[in-house]
Image (cartoon, rainbow, N blue to C red; front, side, top):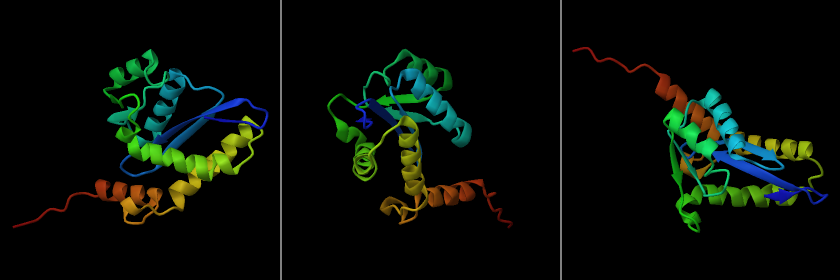
Length: 160
């Protein structure tokens, strides 16, 4: 959560792929409901395919009927971390800290449109230009592209 220069509250939903470390999306709005979360996950699924599991904290948007019904209908496992146990979701907690330090705290945001543009540019930089130690120092987009290429390659056949 953050605020615009006029004091109006701004909420950010960060969606990060645990495996590729890609920042799938950062939804920015004045408020985020369970329906907003479902829309963001549906949009991500159209581009990336359906997630097998979604790990979240226990905020109201994550324990909503809309998200629960969406997950059940699509066979997606919802993994709620225990209240007060952020270490159960340490990667996203670390990511959100970097997001705050490097993006939100660095900009004086005056409108929702400007916030979305600034945050979108920061997200693009994270995915395209920042090497990640867990990915053998590749940028997340580079690692994901390499993984998709390897996964899509036909298995070699051995003739005896």
